[in-house]
Image (cartoon, rainbow, N blue to C red; front, side, top):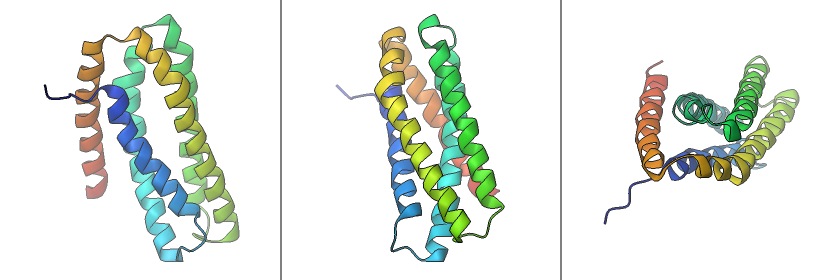
Amino acid sequence: KLHRMNIFEALRVSHDTQRELAARLTAAQVSAEERERVFGDLKRELLAHETAEERCFYVPLFEHDATVDASRHAIAEHHEMDEMVEDMEKLQAGGAAWMEHAKKLAHKVNHHLEEEERKFCQQAGKVLTERQKTDLARVYEAEFLTLRAGEHAA
């Protein structure tokens, strides 16, 4: 039987991309132009993922008492990351202040993903049905890919 991805597996794909980009953003042996390119990629990835995740994963979880607080907390962390990205955009790319912000952003991204996978997905797993898990994965992936493609056109 063909395995249909569930929402947690679908989210994990982008989570792994974010981890990889965050690591490259702050890696020592990276040229300034490569760092800027990685920052652009991370920005696009974060935006598409956050938006799709909020619409297709958090929104259904608002309907359950057990996951409403965790959903709010996760959305608050998305806003914090967005603000960190905006702060970095105002600074000289690759400069000392920018690098300091980059390290903070990478740390925040890793913390957020870790918390989401360890705690939040466990809680969500208890309130969503198997059917919902695969349906949400399909909706999330379509939304994410649309947002990601739209970003490239911008």
